[in-house]
Each structure stands twice: as structure tokens, then as C-alpha cells.
Length: 233
Length: 81
Picture (spheres, rainbow over the protein chains, first blue to last red):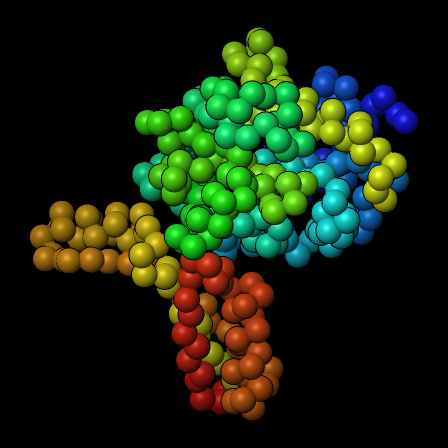
């Protein structure tokens, strides 16, 4: 058992939060190698994967639509199918919805404006590998910075996600920055090993930058990755 | 064979681009009830077989050109080049 679990951070052309994500994970006790999008396999001993924020492949067509066909995404899909932990932040969330690994779709912000500010959030469930350090109903503050964060699901899908408690993170009442349906900020898959969110926890791990609430989420992932070392790959 | 694929936001999907266009048209003095913004993709296919072209275009739409959760599409096949 390594006490520094390996959490691979994928770098697509146009990713720009890969180094922040890796730095945050390293500070929280992980070994966080960067993995290039043309790689066909994850590093040996990978216990979790992070798809970082940015503008992969220029976000042409739809955000995340092209990145999902990267060679590394086949490995990420296989890893997730075996129960491997996968976290998508912002553009990473968009890629995971386009890849069908997470439900819903991300559309342009209702305001049509790029938003870049701290947002108040409510953690709806602490029973996931990504929120175990939180309390259910806990209010946290983490920055967003996106133009296409308006998460959408039709009424049937939304009802199903509600019933399965897959809506893990919501914008606090009155604090929705993008018009997402039902104030959804982050969702998991049915098995809860894949999580995507628009806010950037990697930008909220150092008191120098304001909030350290992002460490609750990334720290939960490091904890879960530590427990799962050796279980995959 | 040339083809065009028209991609539209599905009815009921919030379309902020369409709303911005609608609002701008009103500012210009046009009486506009609604505007929706989609995407037109022009494709030059290697095949001249219409059935084959149609089948290929449908696969393109399902795999890449549209997100079926939020978008619908219409395929129009042009004549041979």
C-alpha cells in the first residue's frame, strides 16, 4: 500500500488547469502524474483519474465533444467500467457527459456571459468517494470559471437522478451562476465512482487564495484512492 | 456527394444564443416572436450512393455531430458533384 496514491491527471490540448489539479493533489498527499491525451494506457498503479478544466481541442462543436475520442479516453472508460475513480472538473465534466460516463449535458450559460467567481454550494450527499470529508447539507464555497456550465437533464432523467441520489452538489439558493436545471453543480454516475462538477476544487485548497473548501472534495478523493490502491489496473 | 446536416436545439431546451439574437432583432425594429440558433454542417462525402450516404450521415450525427439529449438533426442530401 502506497501512502501516496497515484491519481493521474489527463492533459488534453487546451487543458489549462492540469498543473493546478496536480499541485493540489500532491499537496493533499497524492502522487499526481500528468498523462498525455494520446497515451493509450494509464500509468501503472493508477488509483484514480482526474480530467481537468480547460478548453480541450478548442471546445469546437460542443465542449468536450472532440476530447471524448482521445486515445486516453478509451483507457479512462475501461478504468471507470471496472469501478475506477474518475473526477471531471469543468471541461472534464463536459467531456464525461459527452462520453456518456455521466448523465446530462452542459449548455452555454443562460446569461451567455463567462462567469468567474466564488460560488456558494451545498453538498447534498457525503456518501461518495468525492465528498466523504463533507457533511450532508454542508455549505461550501468554491470558484467557478466557465461559459458552458448550464447542466441540463429532461424531467425523466432528473427524477431518476434524484431517486438515486446522484445529484451530489448544488449551487446554494440564489447562487446559481449559469442557469443549470434544479441548481445542479455536480453529479455522479449510478455506481458513484465517476463524478463531475463545474466548480474548481483545485483552485480552493490554499488559504492564500481564499477558500480551502476544495480540499474537502479533493481530499476525499485522495482518501478513496488510498483505499483503492491495487484494486484496479 | 454533398450533404448538409442541420442541428437544432430541441424544443424546450434553453437557447440563450437564440434569445440574444431575438432581442437584438427587436432592437433593430423587427417584430420577432422567437429565434433559435442551431448549426449547419456541410459535408462532402466520398460516396455517391444515396442510401450509403444517408446511413453514414446518421452515424456521424449519433457519434459526433449532435448530442441527442439536447439536439435534433435533419439531413439533406445534395446531388452528385
